[in-house]
Length: 214
Image (cartoon, rainbow, N blue to C red; front, side, top):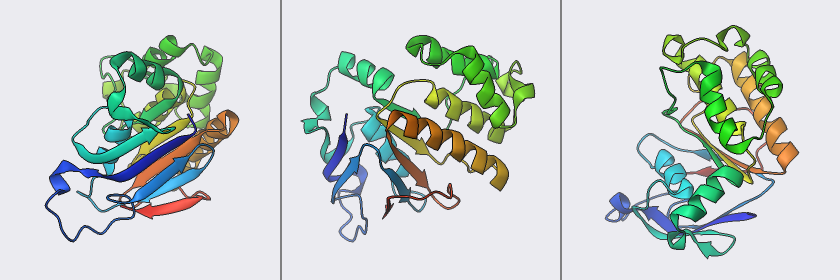
């Protein structure tokens, strides 16, 4: 997959807003593979909705979203399964982890489906992100910031053409934010992937190809 194209796309709940000011909603926007984007937003402007629309979790929008010129509304469940395993990855703002499992088990749930990383490579990520002591810790006993790092590792444990990361560092200090940005960019660069980062304030300090205001 080389492009994600939004053509006059916007959430249905915004249909009656005549004064909508956005560089994404109701615009012609294309995200290209291999480029890095920052989508800045105020709370309530549809940041997480954008990720959910592109990832196919929600379809309550107007306008069109295309992958390489193909309208995603025409995709079937099998198409979405393939896309989410091989082409499109999402780090959820709300994490969507399993609290009864350990940190490593949460990452391995994805990795067992994709067979993409070795256990040694995943453990190296735990070291880089400063939580090697949390590998076998129950997720429920970890802080939100530690859980964010687990969620990033899970999102990276697959091949992808595009990586969507929704508010990835809201609970991290500058040092840990930098570490998470480093492993994300390293993996995205290795795969030649596009990255879309969303933020309502604090964001990864990266050399973005383009910044859009939601």
